[in-house]
Length: 404
Image 1: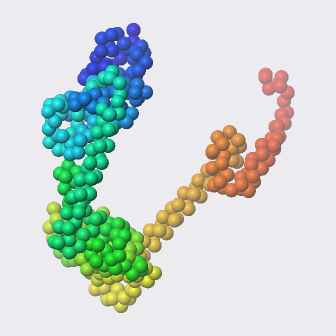
Image 2 (image 1 turned 45 degrees about the vertical axis):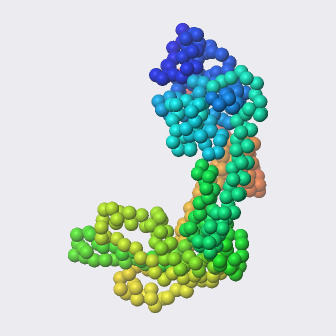
Image 3 (image 1 turned 180 degrees about the vertical axis):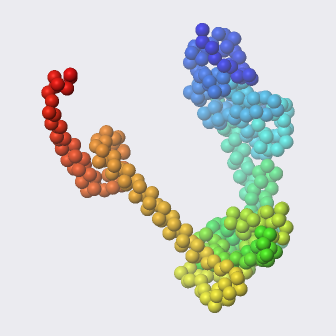
């Protein structure tokens, strides 16, 4: 008799089947044994055609709604316990529905889950979860469209302008919200009107970027004669945007210095600000200076005399463009070395005569990497090496003498 480990908290399906004498080797065809969990589970093919009924009488099929398996309120809600859950189809969700299982609770809309039970009733589209969800979606879209007219008029009266891309429909509260903050990292990607409905700017069609200098100040705490002195590192030409943006956007960004402080505080390169605020208290600070807009194609002019004077004063000056070029060169060298090593490994495989033993896709990959001419040359060398017959060593003794 086979032995197997059963979960300490098995689902109802496992409890029933074990009571009937089922084992991991002998069980109904619609279930499978999960050794990692120590219990039986339904096969996906069986669940695909299963129909569930909600307490309100709505029917839903697993292949369309994908009932959730979750643990909540000390209960495991899953198919094996005959209580998988789906979200309430009504908008707004009925979080305090009196028909649902009280153990599912109420509260936030994302908790508006309702458990279904298996049923033998024939599936009907009119009484299905799909029909109600589609009907509720259309009604919600109509409510949003009607409310948007009044909401837009109220925003225009207060702010003087209204942009639909800054409006958000909250279907749970049945109201519109307006994002008053202007984020130049996101908003330009959605602005499709001229002039912009939010800020009234006009686009010239030209692109550029915003550059600025970062001044880092470090106080030495090394216990030496120079302990307590401040060291300064200047990084010139740091880009605010990763890619070129319209000059109108760049000009608006340059007029908001707080955006640069926010970007620095959320950058990994200046994670020391966290330690300064919570641990160091007076060892490190960062300043943003010389904010300017550079059109696309133009180079940021370098002040050589200012750099020399800074070096004379003991200040370290770094140009962000030089850092970027050095990083690109390092990456290029690393890739070239890796590619050369890969080619050497492939050539060794061909020389050893193992090329014909490889799979078709592996042969195609080698041919694409090292080239067809090089592959033919290596295969000829490998065939030539195999055709050379090693000379036999001449012995002065006969086989009878060697045996003695």
